[in-house]
Structure formats: C-alpha cells, structure tokens
Length: 272
Image (cartoon, rainbow, N blue to C red):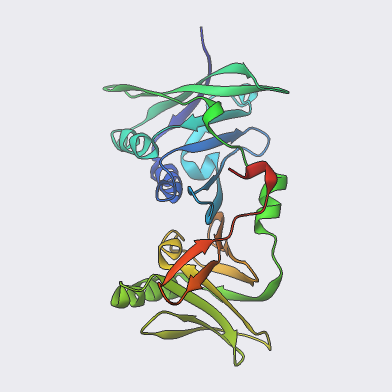
C-alpha cells in the first residue's frame, strides 16, 4: 500500500492561484511540501533563466488541512503539467473533498528523498488521479543557490504598488512592436520607460542607474505590491502581499536590431 499524506479541502482557489504564479514561466513545477513550516514551496525559472520566481503558501491559506498532523512529512512533488492540475482542481470547487499525495522513498546520488507519485482527488461524486513526474527531470534550487540568484549590487530600492504595475502593462500595449523596458534612477526619481512613454513610478535619492529588460519578462510579474531592488544586473521584486520573490535579469540591447541576450546567473550548479 502506498504511503499517503491526506488533506481535507473545501475552497482551494487560493492554491490554484498560487500554482498559476508559475504556469506562465514553465509548464512543469517542482513543489516541496514543507512539514516543519506547514506550507508549500516552489521555485521555478524559464528556459533561458532570465526569470526566476519563488513563492510559498501555508497549508491554512491554501485551503488544505492535513488530516493527521502527526503524519506530516516533507515531500518533493514533480508536476509535469501545472495547467492540468489547476483544471482538475476546478472540478472540486463546490463542497468538501479529499486531496491526497501518494509518495514513496527514492534514492538520489547522495541522499534519500520522499517523492510524490500521484495526486488523488475525491469527493462524494467524483474521483481523479493525477500522476506526478520523476524528480530527476527537475533542477532543485536550494535556498543557498536562490540567495545567490537574488544577490546584486543594489543601486536603489523603491515601492511598486499593484496599480502601477497595471498601468505599466497598459502603456506597454501602446508600443507592442518595441521589446524593451528600461528602469532608470535619475533626477531623484525612478522611471520606467518604453519606446513611447516614460512613467514616474517612485521617489529616489541620489542614485543613478539604468537597467533594460524585455517586456515579456515584466508580464511574468504577478499584479501585487512590491519592494523592488534595482541592481546592476537584475531587478528583484519582493511582494508585500504574498511570500513571493521574482527576479528579472537584465538584457543587453543592440540598438541596431533591437535584440538582446540575457545574462546568465553565473552559477555553476545551475548552468546548462
């Protein structure tokens, strides 16, 4: 009989919304069930590593309650298709149901891990099973590596409310043919600049800096309120609303072709 970790659930819209944070970056996701802190944790990055996102959500906030606290264990679960899991959860939006993680012990090169093998969803009228993926296809970003990813020489910090993010996205739609955004600290202000606009987004001290990113990167930032680090090679968005951190790496603009090449993290353990 398979080992299982069972949760009771009623409203898991917050959990689905949490999964959606990662769906626009990559199709697949490695999720850690953190027993000690009673939460789900995930870190993901896109193919060229120009976008990195970390987010966690507590069991309580996710709408999932462990049936037996004594049975809680730390499990890593590989989700092959985030969208499929979200669509499956949509069938359980009304009434109580059981959300179960099947898991087994797997041997890694140097250690043993508990790995999820399937999700089981069961209500009084519907049962579903979703197979999970092997952990071998995922590159685990350890807390130490993530700290290195967010590390940068910070020129200035500034607040970026959700309403300003929405305004920037609306302005970006006015010059869709232009690929870049520039974030600039100058004249005691922070500006976000496209081809046809320059928006004052925050007050600033005497810092002077400029960093270019792709618009497509910015669209992957969730519409929340943030404290943003403007660094010499990246933007780091730390949410005030949820436990979410998003890192956007700079691009080097070639004005002749309006093309760019993303800087890599420079971390040997995660290089291709």
